[in-house]
Length: 108
Image: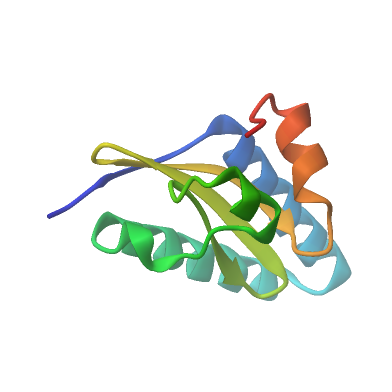
């Protein structure tokens, strides 16, 4: 069964910022490769939405509907609701996820 995958505006902005950072710090080719790999990774959620793990910051909440996938040094945070997967955040793995979710009014 296929799920509908949607990417939030915030996650789109995250991706653009990360791509710009990689292009400046490394190269346009590496930034393009990151975007392509991330796009492919997100597309796998259509068929396998539960493949990610619950972020450690949210384990105590008890919800299995918020999950993450890892790519390079980044975390892709997404939620599953009915037959829809919504990508919420793409963030550097070293950043504090709780504060980012609070800033975006996504507290759990």
